[in-house]
Length: 101
Image 1 (tube, helix red, strand yellow):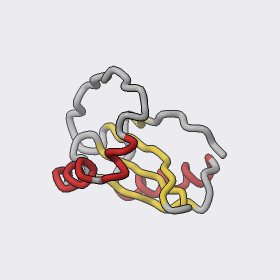
Image 2 (cartoon, helix red, strand yellow):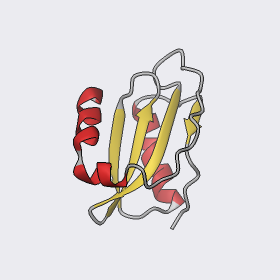
Image 3 (cartoon, one colour):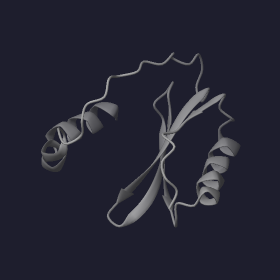
Image 4 (cartoon, one colour):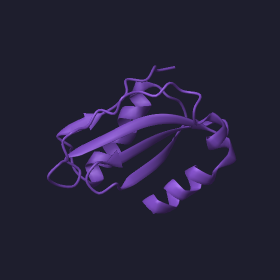
């Protein structure tokens, strides 16, 4: 699935148009976790008028996308708690500290 996503983004006309719009930042490597769901990353994104939460496991690249009725901290925390109740509590949660609207 990762290859399919990469292929799609590589050939997406909209992605290609905006690809160089952001200044490139140096890559910061991180230590690879030793087990699944030891380290997860989450981010909010906007798509077709709705807000979503993307959660990805660093180890397996397993991801989940959740619709968010709003981007309040309480709503995001509730969604993350649901993930952790089903899978496990990560030792590390990475986020970009995005603004809460």
